[in-house]
Image (tube, rainbow, N blue to C red; front, side, top):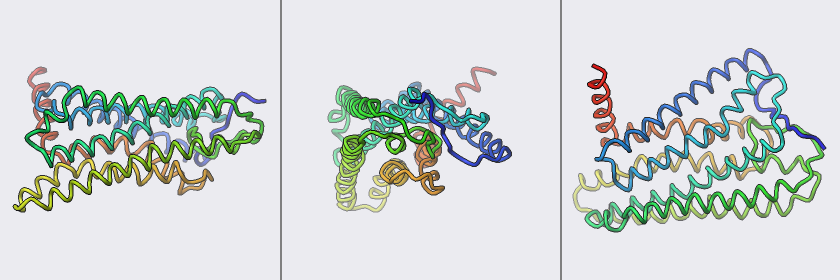
Length: 304
């Protein structure tokens, strides 16, 4: 038995490693800054104390967590010659990658339902999506994802890893661990498939259902300006959904092969999307831009 895996990741060329280190460091710093600013802005500005921005704050926190699980170790390996990770650390990373990803899938489904309620019943939205319900939906998303991730990881931890120690990836994920085992992994694959169906396909169907109702409601609005305003409230969320599921489905559900294309999809899901989400909501949402301006003026006035 051995105690470490090797994360093969990217090119072994020293110059390329340095460029990649700087590139991912900048992305990680932008991710931290963008999501922290979004969290502070939502908390400080009472105009944003609505269900939509409560869920957006949770999304920013999730993006912070997800990026912080994978990127620091990836940065360390860009400067290290060994590029190893302890088996226990690898399992822990796989757990948090799965848990945060599954929580985000549930949260995006909840946000789609919130947009449906806001568009179809704008006058009753505050009553229907009250604080207790919003908090319950968030806690339910976290709980379901973490319990599912724990079951998968406990089953993976019981495997005997006695084959090739090399993981053809920049981070530890469940699907990349199974080929390294000399035990029977069919129960693990079955459980992972069921979890994927539940968290990714299940939530995707819920999102499609919510948007089908949203489209139906928007089309029933008589004025063009009303339809445009209603759709604009969903554009940021819809962009985030496309980025998340477009890359997430491919990075989690396709067999692990270590191909460059697979690596690109995994990078987009794990590294790039958490950086883009605050930018998407800032550019496409007038309320966020106005709130950001108010916060910046407040800090400028404080220091002058």
